[in-house]
Length: 208
Image (cartoon, rainbow, N blue to C red; front, side, top):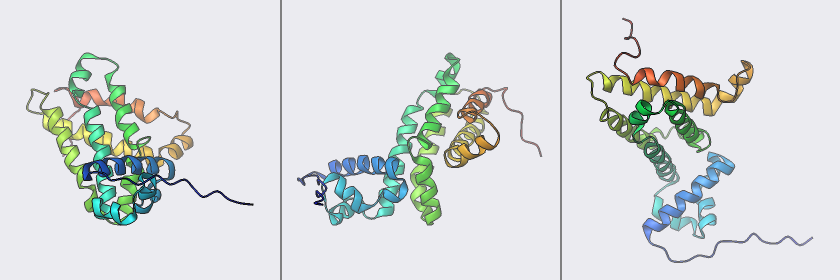
């Protein structure tokens, strides 16, 4: 039986910034559909109608591509969490909205599996965009606070959200099933705890 050849995207001339934008969009789609292993230079080239060599020229390496994709996703999360302190102070439903944004980035957005892939491959330097974005997020939240203890509490809040969301994306479904918990159990718990980190009289001081 004759098998029709797959339809390839027609190639056209594009500027470097345009190629990177299209490449990152294609990479995100491949990540969500096929997991980190699907995010290859060849697959992205097929998606955007460009040769493997040209994609390599614009991104440098598969690791650099993964790094750029992670940076793009984390920056999206940073934008989504803008004015988070103001929201938490004025909207009783805000803690859950904040938790959902963070957890969605790691789960539905694919940042969790991608981070795990990068870590397991040993290319931890490609997580540098995460470091930069996390610091920027902390600075942005601290800038909206007006007490001396805010920086320490905000760092703990971001640590709690990021690590919990990452863990929930990777192993959460299995652990929740073991403990007969709902799909959003961890999100709900974080939403209840988060406000404590952002008020001066919130969490108790560390022991020892």
